[in-house]
Length: 154
Image (tube, rainbow, N blue to C red; front, side):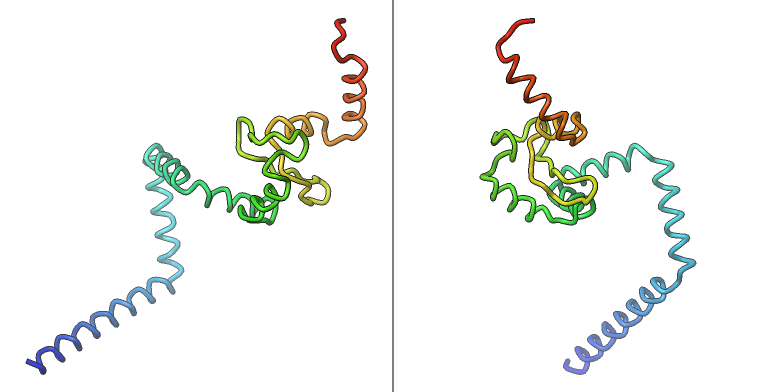
């Protein structure tokens, strides 16, 4: 019985070694990789709705992973670092101090020249800065206008 068990174990080990060698050969063959890439592209092109739905489902199921990838790409920070920055601000918008992010998730405000992160904003404050083109003069003029015309009818 022992000889048979050793024989079976030896066969399984040889089979696993052959399988590993095959996989390694496939990985090393650039021509095969190119063929697989083209075949996958063709499958996606022939069934775009199917693959679009798969992508949407993946994003829904991996929302934090998608956000983390975006933050890493756009600003060089992780989702955890962004959340820490938001916590330092007291869990609210850096400008209006609201605790609700608005229509979208929190926005990472940054200087467009240096790409340095300034803070975390709600969607309203982020749009306000965007519409003012990050221009101090426009924002000061708008504040002066509001102060001068607060409650006055035209």
